[in-house]
Structures are given as structure tokens and as C-alpha cells.
Image 1 (cartoon, rainbow, N blue to C red):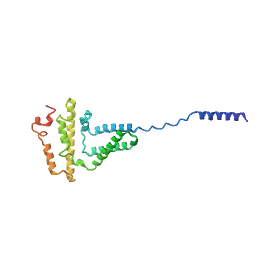
Image 2 (image 1 turned 90 degrees about the vertical axis):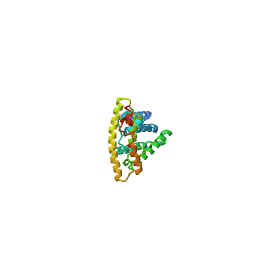
Image 3 (image 1 turned 30 degrees about the vertical axis):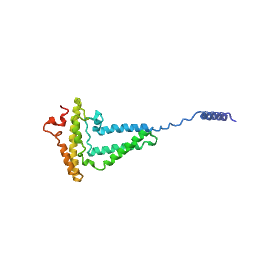
Length: 223
């Protein structure tokens, strides 16, 4: 046999033996994300974004970063932003495989899913046309905050500046509330007269509206 051919065959055999001896390196497969870790990240993101969206809630939680802000939760812009926020969190929840999550994170995820779906459903009823009622509403909450006995702090100059900015934002909220009530009147979407009468009495209570400012709830942080 021709020496050149023999040499070529020997080289080929050596290469095949070497190829068989070297372990194959497969492309790295992406690691399956741990569902508990993914859920914890989602919960943390949800909580942080929720506080930004609802600064009054942040104040109630003792987080002072947003004490100068007030959500205009009855405005169209806010409602759209709120719905988008809930929808995004629900989409992230749906992407997590809960079957491999441990019991507590899985239960928290199920509760959050129910809460978000409920809030989205609630937003379709147009409750913003009744901005507050005799039991609950920003006017009463705001009076409590301004009294100095609530969660709004009044210890430093910055605290007082924060409150004044919130007062300014409350003016905006009040103007939107008036338009929403008028919208409700046009749609015949209103509270019974007897309840509205109670609301008026509450708003004109002497602890809120008083010719003597020292008798007002809002005098508390000054006294």
C-alpha cells in the first residue's frame, strides 16, 4: 500500500481515538428558576410599587418616603394606572410554576391572585362616582392625619412641609371628587338622601370646621 495512504489512515485513526476519549461538552442548559425565589422577588416588587401608587398606605405602614404625596385615586389616570399595575403582577404570577413552590409562598401567591382579580373586577363598577360615604372616605381620613394623632408625623420641619404638600394635593382630590359626584348625579348613581345628610353633618363637624382654629383637629400639630 502506498506510504502516503498508510500515513493518512494512521492519522485518521489517531484522530478518531482522540475524539472518542475527549468528553463531549454540551451547551449549558438554562437553570429552572426556583419558584420560591421568583415569588419572593415578585412579592417584594409588588409591595414597593404598591407603596409608590398608594403613598397614604406607605405612611400608615410607617414608611416616610412618600409622606408628601397623595394619590388621586378617583381620577381616570390613576384608575388606568392601577388596573395596569394589577394586570402586570397577575401576568408575572401566572408565569411562576406554583406546583413546585413550598406551602407558604404558594398560599401567599394564591391570596394575592384572588386580591388582584377582585380589585380588577371592582374597578369595573364605577365606584369612583361616589368618592366617599358616611363610613369611609378621604375627607375623614385626612382630618385624622392632620390632627397629629394619626400616622402622619409632625416632628421635624420636613414633616410639616410634607403635610403642606399633601394639603395642596387634597385640593386637587377635592376638585376631582366634585366632578365625580356630578357624574354620579348624571348617571343616577348616588347614595340615599339620608346617608348624604349624615355625610354633610360629618364634614361640618366643629372639630373640622370651626371659627375658632384652636378647636379644630388641625390645630393639634401646632399646639
